[in-house]
Image 1 (tube, rainbow, N blue to C red):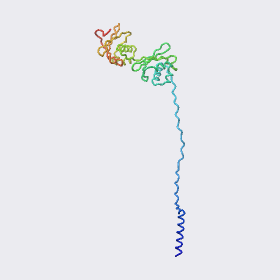
Image 2: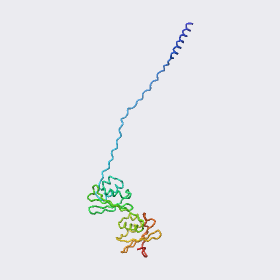
Image 3: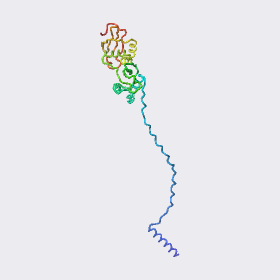
Image 4: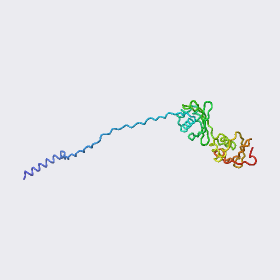
Length: 252
């Protein structure tokens, strides 16, 4: 009995000494490491295709004067600088670019006339502005056929007599678009049923806000049109015509 107590006391003494020297270490069971996941091999990357360089289509050169003129005005309206340079001489290009009107609008073919190795083609806007292109006959179908540009704009005069003269000149030139810009479809239909005069005189008399403008000549021509004074300087100032003209002349 005394031996057992002595042995127990000795064991406690050993344990106490071990604890004082750093304590008992507890070994935990190692945690198994996670199984590495399988990864698919990277697929090869296809480099992006670079955009193909853009090139302007080569300019083609019509062999007819009308088509050449239409292509020139289309290039001008679309601001296709290189195409316009290909179709015109430098002087003609400068003349066209100096035209004080928005280019990107319809240009309606009027006519083409030959003269002294050139052909003159005229085109009218919807308001009767006229562009005439002079093209060299031998250069049609080739670059730089357009050698000269003339511009005849529709002008809205601020006095009644000049306004009606512009209307009569448009009638003489068969420029019905300009006639319409200055008057109305009714007036255009009325006057274009007659032959325009080769020579004429114009005078006017104002009453309130309306001008009575007479167009006459020695051959018996005698027209009177009405012009709205507040509209002068703008479109459609010619509002009516007098038919028949009776009584003494409104002016002479």
